[in-house]
Length: 281
Image (cartoon, rainbow, N blue to C red; front, side, top):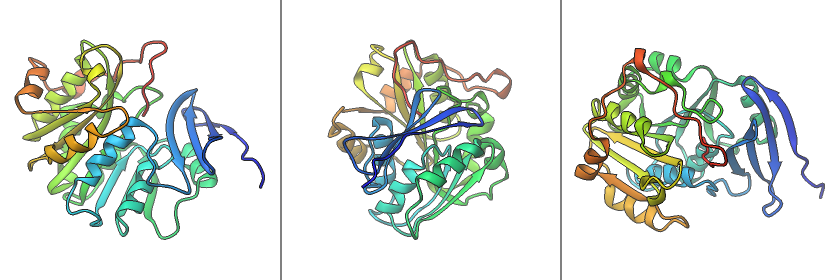
């Protein structure tokens, strides 16, 4: 067999590299401007390498009956890791993926083909613009994993954005987002406050070291109008190689403290990771 060759290509928002994993056949790491973005194993699409992706996978796994097909909207595409995962774990799911970087989408679909029969449609568009024009009550789950480089764009952090996300969800639907922050958590607390103003049920998944302020890292926000399956999420995240904690209820409200919902005019991008910090999106 020919040895896989790394691919380097300029895309709309930087320089992308596809790097083969020497330990797994047909597995690839996607980086943008040197920052890890996605990991895909074409032979094992249910394999999630990054911790934040595993946690989003747990949210998908605990939504509805096991194996039941879902209608899912993904904001942010990367290497289409989670759409591939859902196609493998919930066959028959209908998925829309919105990615602003059209050149990145072209690279990924050229070199990392989607599985045969997967109902995954990709769109080159701005995430919020797409969301605001999408049909109301049209999806079961909305997954937001949008990073411009290593930062969540400001226009995807406001109360107006949260309301747009709520509008496309069906009753009982789930919103899940990959975020990144470090102590004193001004950004993360503001995002929790923003979504708590729209959704009555809220949870956050993160490693204890991140929550204690020992390092910068990823956190997954989960929001819904219906109770979130905290027990199942807690069990799954505790069993990960790097166990995480699910914060909810009074503990989460204490974490939010006096943070206020973010208005469009006050919105800012998530903080730049410190030098040497590793967060992915």
